[in-house]
Image 1 (cartoon, rainbow, N blue to C red):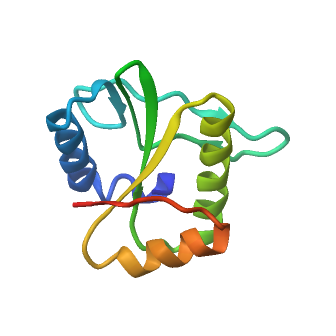
Image 2 (cartoon, rainbow, N blue to C red):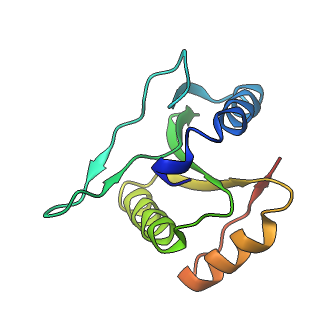
Length: 123
C-alpha cells in the first residue's frame, strides 16, 4: 500500500495484523496504534520513502508484508514491491503479499508485470 493510501485503509491494516498474530508471528511492527512503526528506507537523491506495511518475525526469520489494494499509483507500488523483494532475497528473509476480495486481479497483474511469483495471503 502506498503511503498516501495508508490513512484510508487503517481497518484493513488492523485486520491483517490480527491475522498475523493468530498465525504465530511475533515482534509485529505496523503503522497502527499500539505497534512500533517499521523501519523506512530513503531513496538516494529523491524524496521517495519506502516503508513496509507490516514487519514480523516467526521462527527466527523476518517477514515483510505488503497489503495489496487497487492503487492510483501502480508505478510507485511496483517499485516498492521490487525493492522489498530484492532486499528480502539479499538478507534471506521473506516477502509476502496480503490481498482482499475485489483486489485479486489487480494484484495478479502487478506481480506478472514484475515477474514475481508469490503465493498471496487472501483475507
